[in-house]
Image 1: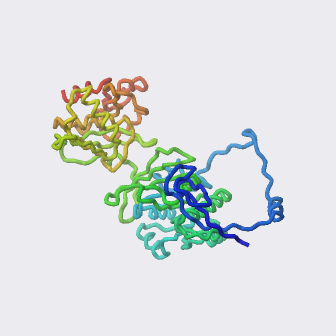
Image 2: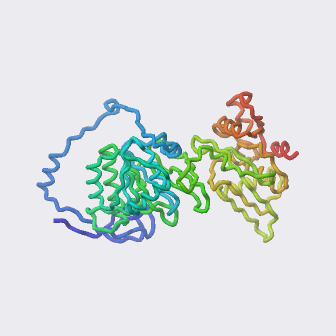
Image 3: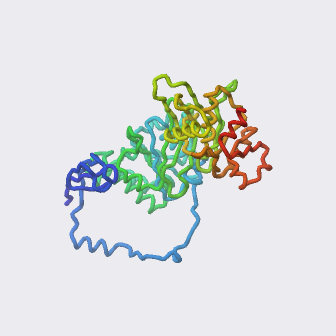
Length: 457
């Protein structure tokens, strides 16, 4: 006979407690415990012994006894998704995709499922009806005879369909709508999300079938549900973007089968998401004339080089304390660069308001754009425009020196491909490659002051 009891789970780490606690003893988070009704089977000792005797006997192996085999990945037909996942979909992997409502998560997975013509795809929807999914598929303009739709939220019914259909890929939209009959709590609760994810993970590993889970996010931008959900899955993808802009960024925050620094860029159109194969073209604003305060920096996102436009606006501070307002860049690092400009280069930044913006809505952490930021700030302050055929790739140190950056050849090649005539780098990068093989003029400098003298005279 099943016994029901009430337990409390921490929504951050999944810690279980018999009573409510204000502070979690595991992760030290406050006010994160939620009550769940858990049903456990009453199994006698004799039944447990019988079930244990029927279990498969497993043995530990050494590394030499384990045969190594190359991972056979499934190409989805979407180059941006394949890049973010690490060259394709890994069989048996559990992938969690999170993002704000209306950002395009369901459209992305529907589009990918319809492009997989050779694999049998099961799309499980707990939020939309079959007619709504049909309308979206018609708008996208794709069709596949190997694409199956199931509108169900009970995991027992879902696994019965999976057993009879035997799909190659399963998509669940969304994990918060599912509920398992093994638990009495409501769908979307901490216990249900964890239980449903555990059942899907077991299915994925035992059958070697990749499973995609679409997840909601909270107002803080975190994936809703217990934090243990992100620990259970193999890959966590974040679908970002402003609903008022057409571009979307697919970013990986966890990946057991590839790099976590890769991004994929899409453009949201009326007929679905379009892959942006050359992001540098959309990150550089098309303008009629040269403007002050604009510089182009060469950065890297994973293995992909990007040329991004950096916009700066410097104006005298009218209310005493100057403002430092960066968008898409770390404010502390901006303060450091302004201190270097004042201390090492002689510019009086303490009386100026500084506004900084990364074009395209990207968040850049690469220190290689330090030089471009400094150039854009001084260009706006002195009202001197920079040629749109010049780009920059160097880190600025506290002494005003230009430090070398990694994979500078990729940055130079991307700038040359996009038609730039000159690129300013650190002289300490020139030892690692031969600049004569590039058609673009490579200008190495050791100090920030020398770059200002060469540009502004």
